[in-house]
Amino acid sequence: MVEVADYLTREHAEGRLPARESWLACASMIIGACQHYVYTEFLSTSGMAGLLPSAENPVREYARTIVRTLFGVPE
Image (cartoon, rainbow, N blue to C red; front, top):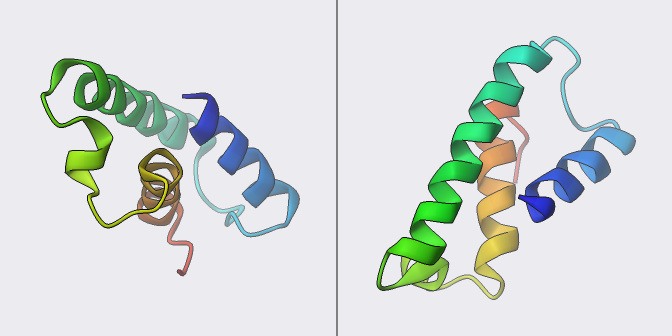
């Protein structure tokens, strides 16, 4: 959750998050994504590494995926 929040803070500070998006809706989706992260990391047998096996840092890559999906941020 901290990784997602940190990434969002950096993206917002650098002006890469579109201002037109509803922060309430995005916050709800981020909370859901964090719950999914917790389930995957702690309750599945593979963890985040199993979900994103090619990622150098699966947690950071998951955070980036969430931001790209919610805000349409290009890769």
